[in-house]
Length: 150
Image (cartoon, rainbow, N blue to C red; front, side):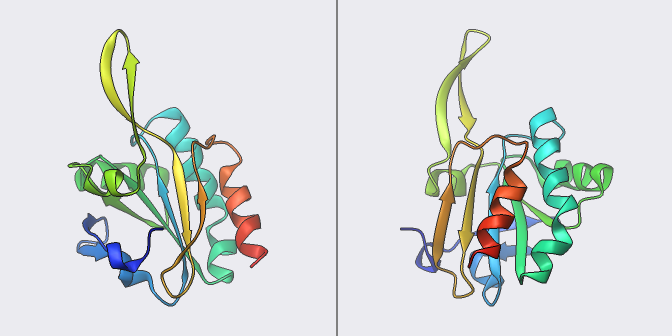
């Protein structure tokens, strides 16, 4: 089980490095997505954005993470007007830690893909829910309903 004993440190769009433990005291919705500015990832990000105030009212923070750079994240965040921060994991260290990578073939080439996944942590930093291999559309609402049930 993933918890704060497996903390990480990644660059953030908030201009400083962030660790998992920085979010203690709130519920944390940590969602992994494949790539900035792609159709499914934009849908998912916008749905989290549209529900952001509802998450905040439930004392929950949303954080997106992908293998893109902070520079790419900043452009994506500005273009889509995302109110939450994005973390950069270009070396895929945290992706591996959370087991969200899968070998696949794309256009006949071997690639390593990010499996769209979301992890919810309680206010003490304990993992309480995993959503793996999710569809982008409707997922934010599913996570919101889960947090409402707590």
